[in-house]
Length: 561
Image 1: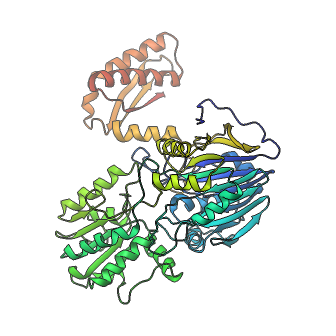
Image 2: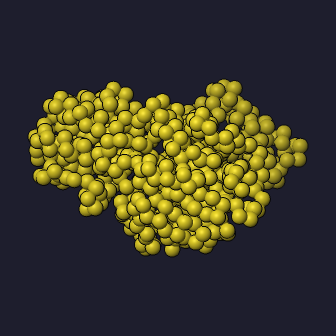
């Protein structure tokens, strides 16, 4: 099994007739999925998603894939294929289209409809859309694409087979093998087998659940659990799930109808996405069940159901505001039931438990994956992956979509079924398929691109480190006035702190050592203001570390007068 080497150099030119694969996101993390395929001088992109920030990304709204390595080649892009409509696969598309607005977009009806509303939010013109469905075969430049139905936790998901002169690639996207899906659309294993008979040279497979043994339970197993929650609840029910989880919303609406309750959506993205799903026929709303959220308050609590965003503890989501009791019109009351109908994305655990604790504090009963079967994964478990490897019989496997442990587990499954060449790559690691053999060819620069307000890419890891220090350790500012002629301290030091010690008298003990250190520095000929600032920083830093065991940000200002 090939592993990426941390000291990989830039790749050499792609050999004639070879296919190059460059993952720009989604390998080593759960989110911001994006892969570049290069053949005969042309590029095909598959997915363009976002990663949601964690606690160690203060002030960051979104994290994008890093496409800087192909920025000067965007005119070579034939199309962007979107496998399904989740944010971690389509969410970064508006930012890419700001750089080249006419990239053809290829995806299923629901996927492109969800993306279309997102583009309008970003005030971007509608680019060329190619709506495809399972069984369709279309060509973009040297890339011959065939689409295969797969099921996932959103309708209309597709796998894509990419035929080139270098061989065939089969990319699963996110998928599972639910044999009793709510919409009756199963993963097309017959198509997988047919492609396997033709010969799959490189198989890119979803790794998210590769560590989980057996098979992912069917979505239908949740229906009786939701029904039980409705039966047991004597007051209002609030259900939180992903704003694009059409199947889960369908189950909740059906339960509301069965228990003579009325339901309303809370959260802008939920209202928008479910409106699209209903208009296109992917969501069937029972008669008289759906009302406007503000009208729901007129009903008695035992007839209310709210379907909300915020199942991952996102700080600005509807559920987080409800938990903090600062939502515009939804106020949690003792006896309410809150159903968190989603899994925990790795890294979001703390945020989710903060919301659960906030809701429980106000007397709500919180039903979540930890205490009830209220969610099943949208990803294939180990048993399903083994089935796929045995059906497809690929020559080479590149696990995608997951943390490194997931991809290693997925690679081991492939080897167990007899696949001899498994390549484990991470974001930026270049994999070439030449003469039927996949191998690591080098690495391109590939970091995180942070969206902070309206700023894209201006925030660096160094900036985030500063923000973490400010948030965790506080900061100290030191202002000293130095006589420009004598070099002696003429004013100060004036010391102020925030998030460290609000009482400025705390620093009385360090003021004289600062003056002494500056006098020594000037006597040694160090009169440059930058050098004097560094002297102040060192003196204060050592004192704070020794006295308080803290490492705040220290901002020295030396003024010559």
